[in-house]
Image (cartoon, rainbow, N blue to C red; front, top):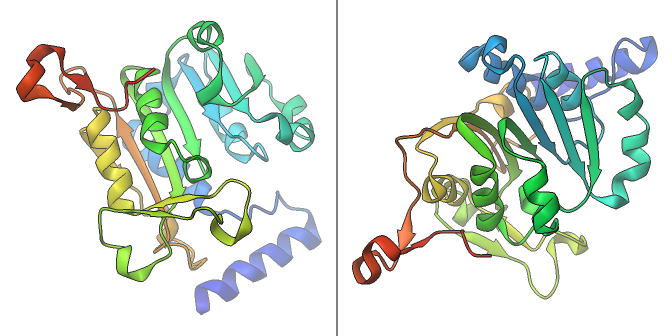
Length: 249
């Protein structure tokens, strides 16, 4: 209760004084700081950064502090109005693409190249092809590259500690247009491991200020290491010709 009161007082203060933006998802600031604590700003200096689903640009402004050599941002066409409110404030060498990352043409997908940091918060649970999404993120990272991932997770208490996906079909979750799959935290961690991420740091950013989200959202930071291998299936039958999990066309 105390933390909630402090947070609301902070919001009121910022709104009245105009001292900084009113970020209703304050965990993002803590998550960014965890990234810097883990790797330092120098690790990403003059490197390529991709942000998927920048929304209000709050994370985008933080990522500019890393002095990227190139900063690519991808968001859906229906987010054009909110994106236009802040895109002009970016000073780095950036490119904004209006597209669904999973449904880009092969030519456009290949043209954006690979990255050393991919920021991917508040997006995964809006897409039913979640394992495929994570695999494509892995594919787009250079070795030594890092992904910052955050997502809503299952609301069912009986599933919170299970390795499951809560599916809402044919009626979506709370009648939204996009939320049909709510994975558990363990399901997201399992997917990360399946596609090849073995070095995974579980963030405590949702525990810093209580928005009643720490039990129903997961944030984590994972690194793609050269020595780590993605999982595959039909290994016993096909051996070296087994299929990479999530690697379908």
